[in-house]
Image 1 (tube, rainbow over the protein chains, first blue to last red):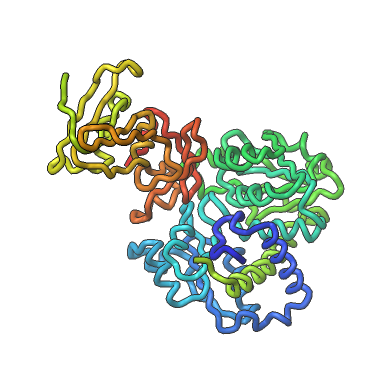
Image 2 (image 1 turned 30 degrees about the vertical axis):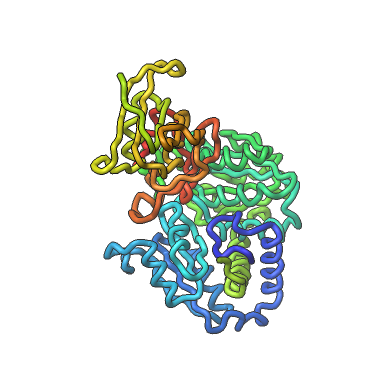
Length: 309
Length: 149
């Protein structure tokens, strides 16, 4: 892998992504062959914001590779509570660990860490900005279950403004041929300007923005649902007004094609009714399983890769 | 009004009227040491009104900052009382610590030592993107004043 860090999806070329997917599939087929792949290596998980899935997924991935983890899962239990800067924390932690995984509520925090760390940094979610390893998970799920990442219509629904997984997924999919986007959200939660101007418009991608789900469901190959995130709103009234705008239930699923994949980065609140879980098109829990294997592939590759600069 | 010509230094002409003070501030010229002539609201054939800044014995200034604040200004380098070089300003591709990110979710709102770095994304619209959070800001006219450090 050429890049030292993984801060956003474009840090990986399409070829590097393919290598990661191939390695992840090999690990899934025979995990026993990789139980010592990272023996003697230490990964620091610096989680300044609550997380279940992502942190467990990373830590489980490292343990299954024979490595070990150190870290914290809330800022209050670290030196941050004493006012330490992100740059200083990253400098210090890179004296102990071989790899840093960081989640932070502020956008761009992992880039600040990467600028002062002496080991590779992985962004495990920065505010409403990017979440590249969720994107690896999403891409691997689609690729494995659909067979390809090209020529498909992807509907992204819900909070497209603060939904970091949405921004990363659009960025990553923008490099694959024949991908159409249908962006389903209330006007207030549309994708940010930089996603529209710098990715969708700049690359001349086929996309449209709609406010209703029903009319577009029949044309989708993938429906990517997202949660309206309470923690991203400064004003609770806005959150309450927007949170129940899109709910996927059996009635709506009846409008969709037989092969439409329903994905969700999780956790969900109520945007997918529990009754949908038994539908074979509901693949969000399967997605979480792929997440650990792709993170195993990523950790292995980053620890073995040559660092740039 | 007449201001004497300088023998060596820089003349920044055709500054948008009202921007001259900002330019002196951001170019970080030590006005206690250097001789600086600052003319406000001079008449201009091109713009109606303009500001002019003349700095004696200083050649090396930050053209990127100047380009960002007022890329329509012209810069003349003076040696031995004559113009030896004219510089056409452009919006810089990258600027550091000149404008601030206004996104309250950006890491620069809490990490005080992190340099504020922006990249030019649209010359016509005068738009820059924050290196950290990707938020887009316009530096058009009065908008620039709101986001300057």
